[in-house]
Length: 238
Ligand code: GLP
View 1 (tube, rainbow, N blue to C red):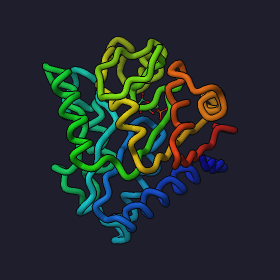
View 2: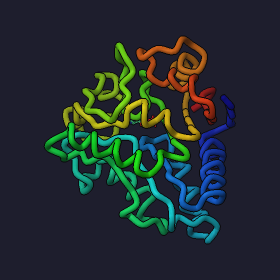
View 3: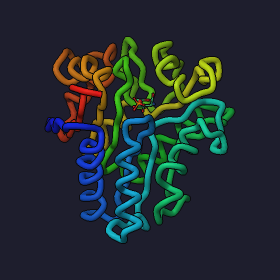
């Protein structure tokens, strides 16, 4: 595991963007595993900037996102599909048909989860998976549990996650209570993992995840078992 500590959010975003750009230059048809949340926004801005300057090409890139809220469609500005279109896809030369987010409106969620795992497999897995970390140590929406779940699945969000994510919604009552998330199998099958963490609120959970026992109670702790993880963090100040 490689840990890069940065001075501030801007530097964290720039370091992460450099790694993503290197992946894309070395393999223009890369499969990028992408994440939402406030943490990767600056990285996406940098990738957009390089694309606009003609330095980075997305034309052959494929992407799979980690998760989506149940009940929200892509037109809903709180959905993760909307987030990705808004922060990245609408601003770069990616073929939108090559971008994938679980369908939060699927009626048969089991079938949707199976479809998503089959899709990831058909793409040959992800070349690089971007991750943030939730306040309870979740990655994607893999919440603390008694066991690690391998496949894409429907999950009930932890009350702390609902509370943490309420800042993006008009009121806490609007936060969906369920989500579809890539499981640990999908995440851990990525060739490389890029974990980003920003702000003092993430310091303690990040330390537990990286240096504590490997346990499904701290879902991100499973990353200790992955052979190629880069952590880029700025958790000493806000
Ligand atoms: C959500 C997402 C996670 C993300 C987390 C942290 O719960 N499902 O993928 O890592 O938020 O969000 P933030 O980066 O805003 O702290």
